[in-house]
Image 1 (tube, rainbow, N blue to C red):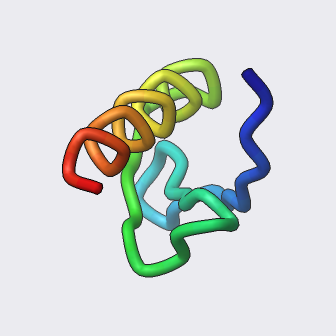
Image 2: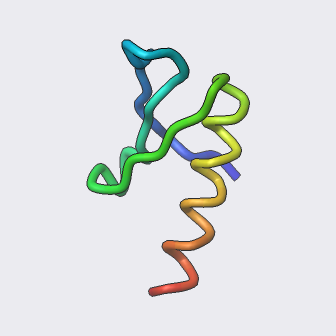
Length: 50
């Protein structure tokens, strides 16, 4: 599965990002790897609701 996403480093540390397909739903992680896992989880949750 390939998901396109946008992310940036937060001023207070860690990373913030969102799935390009769902820009209204942001998530965060302490590392890029954790952020990627959170984005996958977010995608899974969104798909369950649709």
